Image (cartoon, rainbow, N blue to C red; front, side, top):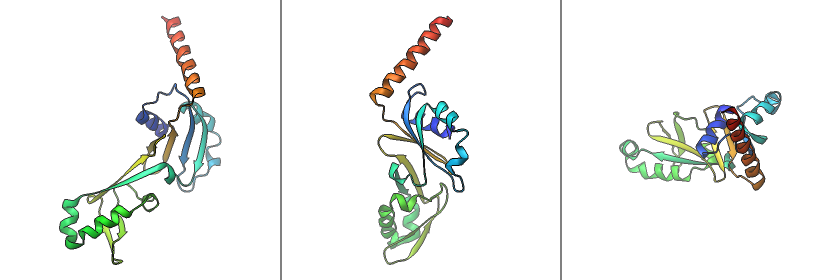
Length: 171
């Protein structure tokens, strides 16, 4: 969780010294928030966030994009290629939530036929919606709120001032 949180901060270009309000964690299957009760204070401290929220569904905080390789899909599906592209455009976040990177993607095209696209033919990208930053892996998704309130900004400035004073004191 800490590693993914740091990745999310790095992507948002927010230093660890800047406090943030919320960390949202989508726990892997079989895990419960109670499993993290003991290390939670350490996670809050390591990532410098105020609150951890555990959710089973983070699709409202994600935007998913599908990119198809037309050079591979076209020859394989021929005249049905446009139906495949149409079905890909209709996919929403809920449809792609269980997709694992590098696996095949199944979809239903117009006419009710089911097709399977290989990992070489399609790629799914995940990104956080505005105001959030994503750090994810195949098993774990962690999002941090990138909104910095005035109170959080002041707290970050105090931390920075303390660090500067400590550095001057040491030299």
